[in-house]
Image 1 (cartoon, rainbow, N blue to C red):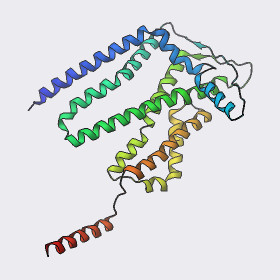
Image 2 (image 1 turned 180 degrees about the vertical axis):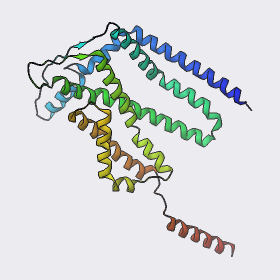
Image 3 (image 1 turned 60 degrees about the vertical axis):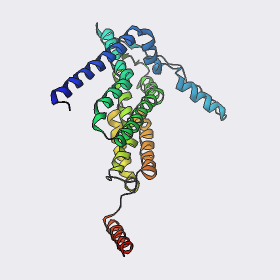
Length: 278
């Protein structure tokens, strides 16, 4: 039986291993500067993959559209801005790349306190949470951010006014939106957990759909740049996640039993027990 100090020592060693892995990944990202920023800046290009896919899909149904070329220069206004941005991006991507190992270490730390059934359940939940987080990142990278950037960067109140964007602003908006979408995509998992605990059910979510839509609009307004176009783009996947949560609750989370029904079930069970004894 480990003492409190023993647990602290194990926790300290675990943190050191996690930090070491993050530093290794961050160093690799830092050294691969060209490849890293090619990936990060790709959504700002007029010929990004998303636009090419949209053009191809529309042409398949007989609608020919072509996204116009545009060019929005990114600038750096501070002497150390590019270097500090490089370090910040390396650290963020280092944590992201090391996240599977971080989850593994955390699970290994808490698993001795879990029962076998809880351990299997925890593994499944952790995998699903991580998968939804990655899906949220991909949704932001390939859909929400490039469309939002294209709209905002090309919006002009007058032709004499040209848009130039600082590198800090671009990276800050990019990383914030990616992270927030990763968090928002945990909605079905949260609904499942609350449903298993008996706090919510599918009927409740259906009943409050209209209120949920207003709340979704508020959340989208908070996590997105201040424009109605991006807000609407973000609202669509979030509301789809809300509907997915209803499906998850109907499929995997049991409906809570009303108190009256529970009393009747208990009485029936007792009556059956008495008959069997007789």
